[in-house]
Image (cartoon, rainbow, N blue to C red):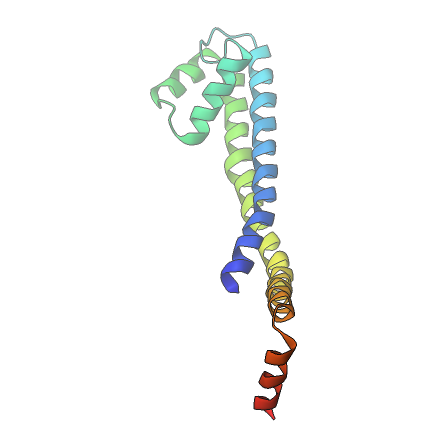
Length: 144
């Protein structure tokens, strides 16, 4: 029963993960658009799609650290925007994800245990309905 409840809770928690991914995508698009609008000659932020790719690489830790120095020498405003993006993603968004998952699991787990019990009871009822009356009477006599 606990495994069944856990599977049902995971289905509800996936909604929270989807909301996190949508917020993350919104931040990437917003910051990429803003950084592209700055006057600079950085290849990584020459267009919105390249900026999105660069911000995703920064978030995943795949961005070369030497490029940060070039970014700082090229434009201080780009560096400030990237720092704000990193702070928003790593501090705010990831902590928000952990809090959302924790609360969603806590709220859904109690409901899901009851739902799992109801599902198990409905299986028992359908099984009992298939038992013949003669066999059911014999079973009741053994209980007395």
